[in-house]
Length: 562
Image 1: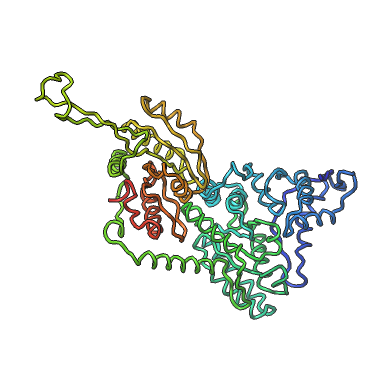
Image 2 (image 1 turned 30 degrees about the vertical axis):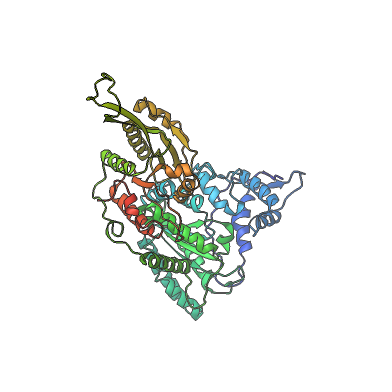
């Protein structure tokens, strides 16, 4: 059911609000003022705005408020969703009612549409490498027209259900805490002792990392009394932006990240985001941080005290460290010595020849198979067979030619968001040349957090250019990174178990603490044309985290180990 809007001035809804710190706490009134009222602002002075349903019945502003409250409730109301989306499509400058996001994510859609970002979905996957980090750099460098693209990138990539606030640098956040202490001093006569302590503790927050989060409420009825910390801290964060808007102009040093309406006006959790740290971080670090934040928000166990700040990620971080210590202790029971215990990485990236030699060395160590695409002819001289040219001369040996089959070569190329098109092309060309040198065909899959269909790529009697042109036509997946799916894919097939499998990757992945079955003939090689220091750092972290699954992981790294 759609609503029809007429006579209204298209609006841009501002998420910054200042609900009072004393008196009754009424988030519904704030929703009405900041969302509903702009939808009923007339296009011309003295004009009127009309909203009608499909039966041409008038819809009042209070009715629209009721629909919004239904749409942002704990369960999805399809009818309210459809009606409000149709209204927002007509009433906002930037909105797309075809978005898969809910009305609760109104501000995300508004920001994404204003920057012409495609809607997220199965075919449009946002990543830290291609979206979050580049937009953070743009915002940090002053090249962004506003914070909308950075905000939408985080929301489209991770969808956190919390209220966020960004600060350009750790220094910008320190400026806010200094301002906060001045405001706290002015209010000290009316603030409860517990609130004063929490505000002073909050001012000690260190935002040098990517983000920091705090739990404000257990539920919607909690911490709503006058001068509570939950009310004051959000009020101050909003007021700080309003007071400095004129001074900052087009280069703000802080802003609001209203991921969902339900958290904007009655937040249970706030997340403080350091833009500079995001701009300088690796995609893996950003992914890990936001996954931890989402896991913390979703956790049913939240410890909240009126006397101490409750950090959002404190318990999940402690649990992760405990799990890591347990895994290390378990793997250290059978600690290995020598190459598999301590890995020394190369100081320079390997050449293509060195990677080829490493693969050939592994291939020769593997057992022959009964049948494969990798055919090897062996010829030896023997006196048990007559010489073909002179069969009557028993003093001249004959020759016996036998056919042998070496294991097939199966390539899994990482096409996740952290791999550029140039990296992909270099890796493929290297593998094509290797296949030409061996005169074999290749089995191929691309993978990210999903895997493409297996394809047999014919390379025999074809030029490198022709093979590359055929390769470019193959489907390629994008997204995150997951090696576990490769392990499972190999282990379910006896044929694939016998192949020499090679993962070409940047090693931006870490396994779970659970023990998994690692394929016996699976090896890893670095992507070409990437920063070697970054590759070594990621490979080092990967190898350490793999000890409980494959203790001899160093022997499976082609072209990495010195």
